[in-house]
Structure formats: C-alpha cells, structure tokens
Length: 463
Ligand code: ADP
Image (cartoon, rainbow, N blue to C red):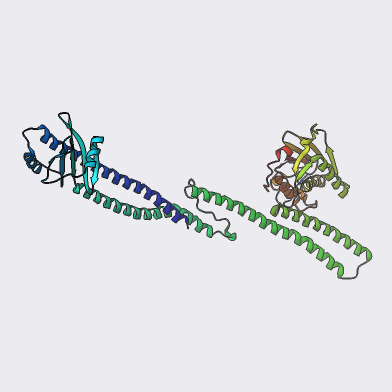
C-alpha cells in the first residue's frame, strides 16, 4: 500500500474516532438530560397531587380528579397514593389499581426510586403527612422527549457518515498534496543518468523534510559526479600514459628489425627495451595500486604497526633498489613510552607512501639525500621528509596530489605523477594528513601526521 493511502487511512481513523466519541457523548448526555428532566417533572406533578389530596382539606378526590384533568398533565399520566398501611387511597384514573406491592416496599426502604414500566417512566417516593408515611407513585410516557432523542440519533448518525466521507476525501487530498513534492523529486531523479550527472533536483523551500531529502540527494549527486569525473580522467590519463611507452617499444623493435644489426646494436636495443619495460612496469604497478585503493579497500590487512621499524625497513628497501639514494633517519626525538610509536594500519600500504616520499625527495635533489625526522605527541606520529632539491613551483603545489600531475620543473626527471596521489590516498585511509612546504631551488618538506594506536580505534575508511 502506498504512503498516500496509508496516510489517508490513518487520518480517517483518527478523525472517525474523534467524531464517534463526540457523537456518542452528545447522544448520551442529551438522553440522560431528557430522562432526568422528565423524572423531575413527574415528581413535581406527583408532589402537587399528594399535597392537594392530603394537605388541602377543601379538595376531595372527585375535585382533585377534575383539577388533574384540567391542568397540564403529562402524557398518559398515572398517579397513585397509598396510606401507611399500603392501601391505595387515590388514583387519578377511574378504577385504576396499582398492583405491585414489591415496588411500594422498595419505595418505603429507599424513600425515593425511579424505574421503568415498559415504555413508561415512573417515580415513587414517601410523602410524610401528619407524621405518617404515605407513598406516592407516578408514571407517564415522554413521547415527545423520546421522539426528539430518536431524531437526534438519526441526525448524529447521518452527520457521522457525512463526516466520514468528507474525511476520506480530505485525507486523500491532503496526503496527495503533502506528498506531491516527493513525486516531483522522483520525476526529476528519473531524468538523471550517467550522461547528465550535473543535473540537480529542486530543493524547494530548503527547510522541510522533503527539501532536506532533496539537499542530501544533491550532495550525493555532487560526490558521485566528482568521483565519476575523477575516474573518467583517471582512465583517460592512464590510457594516454600507457599508449606512449607501448608506441616507443613497438617503434624501437620495428626499427631494429628493418635490417640486420650488429651484436652491439642488438644489445643496445635490448637495453633500451628493458629500461622502457621497467618504466612500464612501474607505471602499471602504480596504476594498479591506485585503482585498488580507489575501488576496493577491503583487501589490505590492518594491524598494529611500529613506525620506527617500518621506516628502517623502507629506507633499506629504497637503498637496495637505488644505491645513489641517501635517506637519513633522525630518531633523536623518540619517546620513552614506545607505545606512542605504534599505530593501527596497513604496513604494506604505509611503506608504499613512505617510499614515494623518500624516493621523490632523493629523485628531485642533486645530493639525492632526504632527512627523515620522527617525533610523536599525545595523539599523533609526525614524520618530516626534508630535502634540498629543486622545490615545487607555487602554481603546482595545490595540484601535485592529483593523479598524473607533474610539476613544471620536472621535465627531465622520470616519473608519471602517480606517487603522491597514491600516498595521499593511503594517508587518508589511515585518517592522517599530509602537508607540503617548498621553495623552488631550496627544497621541500613533506610533513606527515598519523593518529597513533590509542587514537585510531575509530578507524574510518575515508578515501
Ligand atoms: P612523480 O614523482 O612521478 O612525478 P609524484 O606524484 O610522486 O609523481 O609527484 C608529483 C609531482 O610533485 C612531481 O612531479 C613533482 O613536481 C612534485 N614533487 C613531489 N615531491 C617532490 C620533491 N621532494 N621535490 C620537488 N618536487 C616534488
């Protein structure tokens, strides 16, 4: 069942229950008011008759009957008076006998009772005259009153039915009106496809719940669009970067095969091919790592890792790979409490990030040297990679973390512009931060901040 019908049914049920309570109350109170009113009129009539009959000596039975007939009596009124011995001494109708001694007994016990005789309403009470208890019983039929109540019942029932019909339609109308902005959002969302991710849904008054839904949806679209653009650029950059080395390889091989070459020429060509293929392997590894981190982060094992050990291992790996690189570790500010050196994360990934920073610093410096300072504070581990290299031009500094972006001053230094993009993703994955300060011709400082073990319990994947 859709929300519109559910809402209107709930609305109808609420209004219906209010109407039922209201009409039942009106009926109940009107009916009991009529009954009470009729009993008090009946009692007045019976009282007057008893007073005239017993108190006023000048009025005898036949005169009283004449008075009764000529005054405003109640409908089919019957009045009986009984002496203290329960003998009937008066009846306003000829030859009418009240044959119910039980009732007389009950009246004497309770002083006054109200009861029904079929459709008739009756009252009985004790009337004291000259210290003797007489019993007066009066009954009559409130035809007009009962008719009025019956009428009221019909009016209330019809009103209830009409109210119900109006409520059903009003409920459908209001629910439809309240939900129509959702329909409009749905229609707008249907138009959004992968080719027009720039479209946004109408945010209405920007205040109510539906507007909040639209705003949240637009924010999601914004993120999707950004990710989509990033992925598209990534794929086209990757394709472009891969195409060039392949073309170089094919050209080199074709050129070599055009005629028979000397042994030296073959060795030279093979050397060139080997270098080119090594670069290609570097590029494809970088691309694969980046893609893996961007699209599937689940495969990395997270553990408690000690940063000083990780730094030592990484430096050794860098030196083994490139003997000219000189990473210099500075552990002067190590804390007494070694647990401050521990963080929760992936050693495998962190090594890639640290290796990129070390290799960049060495690669972009004439002296191939990088100083790596390790320090800690209460919550974080801080690493500083300082080099005296070519530095980064101001206009590049904000872009160097983009995939495939390379500084303007790096034309003659090998690279694909993937290392820092990968490093940033890894650092973000560890809830850390990276900051760069650099001056062209003087050198660069890359500062890396990682939350330590006690601070990384709420590990979040944010990349
Ligand atoms: P690559 O090193 O392959 O060019 P990276 O993503 O590692 O790619 O670096 C991106 C760019 O950032 C580099 O091309 C360079 O311009 C700049 N860069 C990074 N590290 C340094 C550094 N230590 N000194 C100077 N420039 C740097």
